[in-house]
Amino acid sequence: MTQSSAFAIRRLAVIGVGLIGGSLARALREAGALGEVVGCGRGRANLEKAVELGVIDRYTHDVGEAVEGADMIFVAVPLGAMEKTFAAMKGHLAEDAVITDGGSTKASVVEACRRGLGDIPAGFVPGHPIAGTEQSGVEASFATLYHKRRVILTPLSVTSPAAVARVRTMWETCGSEVNELSVEHHDFVLAATSHLPHMLAFGLVDTLARLDETDEVFRYAAGGFRDFSRIASSNPVMWRDICLANRDALGDLLERFSVEMVDLAASIRAGDGDRLLEIFERAKAARDNYVDGVYEK
Amino acid sequence: MTQSSAFAIRRLAVIGVGLIGGSLARALREAGALGEVVGCGRGRANLEKAVELGVIDRYTHDVGEAVEGADMIFVAVPLGAMEKTFAAMKGHLAEDAVITDGGSTKASVVEACRRGLGDIPAGFVPGHPIAGTEQSGVEASFATLYHKRRVILTPLSVTSPAAVARVRTMWETCGSEVNELSVEHHDFVLAATSHLPHMLAFGLVDTLARLDETDEVFRYAAGGFRDFSRIASSNPVMWRDICLANRDALGDLLERFSVEMVDLAASIRAGDGDRLLEIFERAKAARDNYVDGVYEK
Image (cartoon, each protein chain N blue to C red):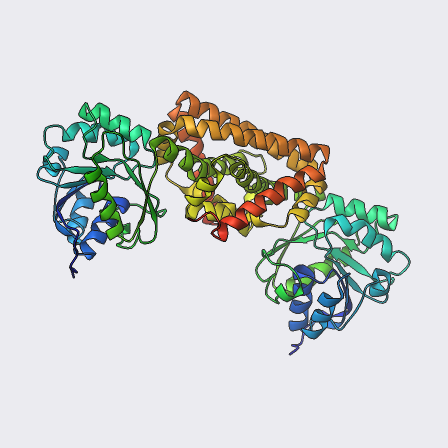
C-alpha cells in the first residue's frame, strides 16, 4: 500500500476530517509519506468512519490532544471555527510543529491564528488548495483530489522558510502545483474567480426564485442555465462565512461588477448595439484565452 | 434511410442552413417526413456542403425562389436578418404555406414579419426550439438536436389553428416537447433563464478582463469558473441582436438583478450573516428543486 518517498511526516494531525482533510491524508498515505495520522473533529460517526476507511489511525475530539507530538498539523475546519481551533492548540504544540490550513480566505485565518494563539508562530504557513467537489464528509474524500490542482501558500514575514518548504513539499507529494502569493493578493484573486461568481449564481437564482412567474421560469430553463447555476447549490453556511471573512475584496469586486451591469442595462435600454458588441467581444476573447491556457504560466 | 410517418411535408424551405435549420431538416428526413428540402442562404460553400451531406436537396440564394411551392418554411436566420427575409417572401408564398422560425425572441420576429410582409399571415406560427450548441454551420447539425428538448410556439390571434397543429406535429416528429406561450410570456421567461445569465457571464468575464491583475486572476481560476463562464464564449453578434430584440424584458430583469446585487453587497459590507444565509438558502433550495425536476409539469 505504501510507496517509498523522501518526504516523511512523523505524525499528521488533521483537524476537521472531511473532504479536504481526508483527501490530504489519503494522498500522503498513498505516497508513503506518513507515519501516524490523528484525526480530530466533533462528529463521532464521521471519525469512526475515517478510521474504518484507513484515512486516520485514531481520533480525539480534543484539538490540544490531537496536536500533541504532531510535526504537521492541517486545519480543515470551517472559517467560522478557525479561531477557537487555534486557541485550543495553545500550550500543546510540539517545538518543530508546522501548521497549515485549507481555508478559502487567508487574511481572516491569519487573524484567527493571531487571536487564538496570541501570536503567529513561525511554523504557521497559511494555505489554500484550490480543489473541492459539491460533496462533503470523509466518505467523499479521495487520494487524487489535489492531483494537478493549484495550492496557494501565503507565508508571512514571520513565517520560517523551512516551514514553507515542508508544506510545499507536502502538497507536491500530493501532485499539486504550489504557488506563493501575498495574503492580500490571494484574497483578491479568489474574490474575483470564486467568491464573485458564487454571488452571481446565488443572486441570479434568488432573483428568479422571487419572481411571480418562478415555476414557469424554472420549467423552461435549459442546459446553459444548469451549468451556470450549479454553484448556487453550494453550502450556504460555508458561503456566508467566506463572505464575512473576505468582505473588503468581495465588496469591492461586487461594486465593480455592479457598475458593469448598470452599463450593460443602459446600453440595452438605449439600443446601443456597438457598445454591447464591444463588451461581448472583449469577454469572449478573455474567456477563449482562458480556456486555451493563455494565462497559464 | 427513411421510415414511414403519418406526418409529411411536401417541400420544406430552410432559410438559413446552419446548426438550427440543418438539424431540423436532418431530423425530419430521418423520420421519413420529407419530400424535397430547398435550402437558402448566402454562403455558397456552406450550401454545397449541405447538399453533399444530404441535409438539403438543392439550394438558391434567393428567398423568394426558395419558398415557391413550399408547404413548410423554416426561418433560421439571425434576428437582425428576419425583416428582410420576410420581405423577400412577399408574392412568392404558396396558398397553403405554413411559416415558422427559430428566433430566440418572439416579439421582434413578429414585428419583423409584420413589417416585411406588410401583414401577419394566418400561416405564420412564431416558434423557438430551446436547443443549441456552441457550434454553428451545417456541419455542426445533427438529427437528434431537438430530441427531448422543448419547443415553444407563440401563436397570435390571427394564426390559423391548422398551421399551429402542423408546426406542433413537425416538432413532435423530431422528438420535441411542444408548449404554447404568449409572445410576451416567452420573451420574459427566456430573458430570465437565458438572456440574463448570458449578461452575467459576459459581464463577469469583462469585469475580470478589465482588472489590472487580469492575467493573475485568470491563472488561478478553477473549475467552477470554467462552468460558470462557458456561455461568455457565445457569439457576440448573436447576443447583441438578442439584447436589442428583447430590450424591455431583459432591461427589467437586469434591473431586478442589480437590486439583488446591491442588497448582497450591502449585506457583505455590513457583515449581516443572517441576511446572507437567507439569500443563499433560498437560492440553493430553488436550484436543488430545479435539478430535481420539481418545476417540470
